[in-house]
Image 1 (cartoon, one colour):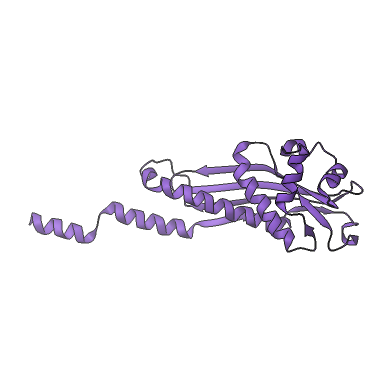
Image 2 (cartoon, rainbow, N blue to C red):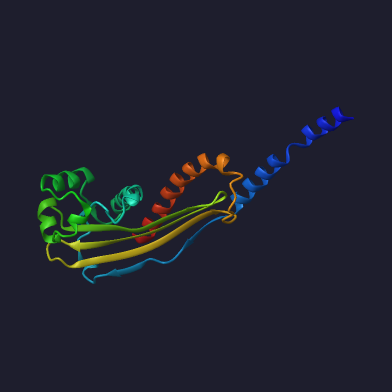
Length: 212
């Protein structure tokens, strides 16, 4: 009888296994993205500018080193979007190389330099100042979320006029709620790292698409 009982239990599977499967399915169906419309302001002169206006995208200004990864993704995404736009974009390696030659490397120092001066240094007709103002991550076993706020300002380097400003907040979340229990922590911890990278990349691209 005991032998048959063990066999039947093996056939039925361990309750913990079933719980993991149910939670995995639930998590898959409880993913989403909260968003809002970007705040945008454009100068009337923007439409009058030539379609091949030469734009230099500057390094992203950050307030915390924890924002560095998201800032790099943001700048890459800005390049991808602007290269498909009406503007002509100065190659990133040229921008960074010229900034280094002129000792203007730190993103927080760049904002102190006038747009007209940056135009002279970079040979660009306009400069784009990107800013990563907020990034918040939250993990609680079977729930994760990322909230990201970024903005940019496009300035004419010949006149100093602000041509375009835009700001956007994007939130991505997955899971079924913040449940304070450590029972699954060891099993899910490796997944969180991968999910974090994938979600960060996804949310940055979404945000950039809406901004531009």
